[in-house]
Image (cartoon, rainbow, N blue to C red; front, side, top):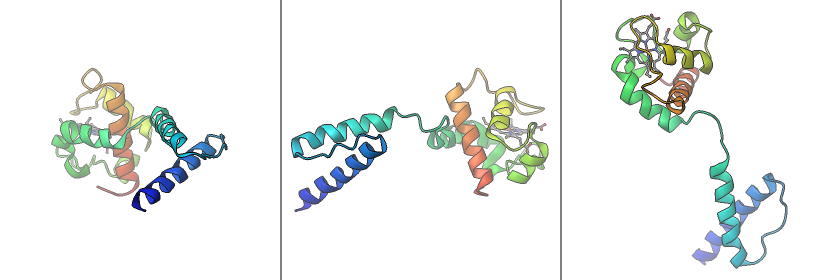
Length: 139
Ligand code: HEC
C-alpha cells in the first residue's frame, strides 16, 4: 500500500513534468515509470533555472562578505548597508542584481574587488542572494 502510494505520487510528478515539456504521452506500465522518473530528473537538473544559486550565494556571503556585512550591515561605512533603501541610494546603477555584480567584481572605496577571487558563478549567486535579502527585507 505504502509502495503503491509512493509510485502513484511519482507517476503524478513524472506526468506533470512531461506535460510541461509538452510530451503528453501517458505513463502506463510500472517498468516504464522508472525510466520516466529518470528522464524527468535529467530534465530538471539540466535546466538552468536562473543564473544565481541562492544556497551557493549564502555560502559565498558567509565566507567572504559577512566580515564587513554581517546581517546586511556595513561595519566599515555604517550608512552603506545592504538594505534596499541604502542600495537604492548608494549603489551605482541602482538597486539591481547587475549593479551588485558590478560592485562585487570591481569593489569600491574600502570594499575589495572580488573578480579573480570568486568565479562568475559565485559572484552571480552572491549578488542574487544580496538582492533577494534586500528585496524581501530579510536581513
Ligand atoms: C573589507 C570589508 C568588505 C568586504 C569583505 C565586503 N564589502 Fe561590500 N562594502 C564595503 C564597503 C566599505 C562598502 C561601501 C563602499 C563605498 O561606497 O565606498 C561596501 C558596499 C557594498 C555594497 C553597496 C552597499 C551600499 O549601500 O552602497 C554591496 C552591494 C556590497 N558591498 C556587497 C558585498 C559583497 C556581496 C561582498 C562579498 C563578496 C562584500 N560586499 C564584501 C566593505 C566590504
